[in-house]
Length: 622
Image (cartoon, rainbow, N blue to C red; front, side, top):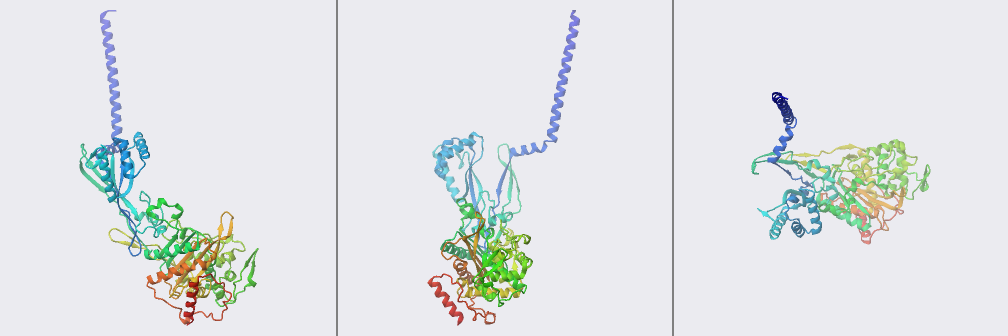
């Protein structure tokens, strides 16, 4: 082949290669261009944030959680400044020395902390908690000790900062009065989130807003600009609880539960005219400062969560409803049925039925209460059960409140009306029953229970909780009931509830417990209670006492719960500045001189109690 032809072919081949290279280069530029357009348009925000994050630190600092106060302004739960220590395992120079230092300062087991530290380092973790919520003074001492130990063992300490060791500003929740009202206040966890009680129900008010602070840094890490973002600050919560009254109630309840060898106990104090809870006690309880050391069973507020058969305290509802409809009168003769009445397939036996409704409630007659409910009929009785709020929550500002148990009337058996009339086939909470007596004490008006008095804002303003009321009984009905219940304390089953210097009215209750295993009421287990108010003419306080499974020989409500009621009243009425009232005025006394009380069951009392009862009786007769 001639040289000219070969030369021509070479030029053509070179030109083709050149075109191919140009085409590839053009395609490559096109791909780059498309990619740049995509990144600039679709991924602009992502890379902007990424670039900013390389020169900007985001520092989060939670504002101090709001304080919980009692009604007088005494702190029940508050937050204090604290610090938390964490490690960056990747920066730790010598994990073995670091573990040795931490073990000596924090009393850790060296092997365990070393194992966790090495594991975190191997997994590439850059965050490892060592100590949480350490109060500032203690944190300062720990920091100084760590520095000394680190320097002594050869770790790097620059400007009082150990390499890989970091302190973070924090806050710690403390409860200055320990276990006082613990089941009401509740507690917040390690992350300052409410877990129970007011801490949980008022979380949105108490929770501190997160403050975000942006710090701009140059390439050398120096801060040259900052920006801060704030949200609504936390609020303080003031309760209706009185710390001093709560303390007295808890002491009386503790002593009473232990004396009765009971499983647990509940006591509630309500101001009837406002519905404000002055005290709500549970025993046994717990200390929210060390909640992790206690069983979770102790965290529940049994006053609003536990459901039980009320027994004879419920007869106030039966009597009250019938009186309100004008279907019975206190001095009306009762058909006692020779001590036994047959209703459907059930027999109700009662040796305490007396000739009048007044006399019968004094000795807690079942038959008299059933007769009162029968006058109403199922429709009428059920309407009053709903009016008193059974089968629904009271609406108190506490979490996990039970509705109790009230079956729809259509599901009642032929004997249900009689059973409910004496406090069975119905489940109630202690607060629901306390409200019944508060309604009687408040002229038939039921006040919605309140435990939050007001919410206060940081700028000094506040939101006060307004009372809510509804009419349940006529005023005259409530007046008559107060007189009848006064006789229960004066002469009947509630005599051990009679406080020195004050008149009191109330009702005892002793009910079998429903046994889930047996699927029926267990006659070996009781819930014993006493609920009442004082003084009788102008009630200032309603007190409910409920004991679960007392185990003493005498375990009726009049034996074990009534004395606790008396002690509470004798202590709180003077504190409430209620003057003594030795007896009802003459025109309001119910004549009982012709009533034969010789067969009234006598409650077991100590010799000192007998002398006190006799002294009171003579004082009134004079």
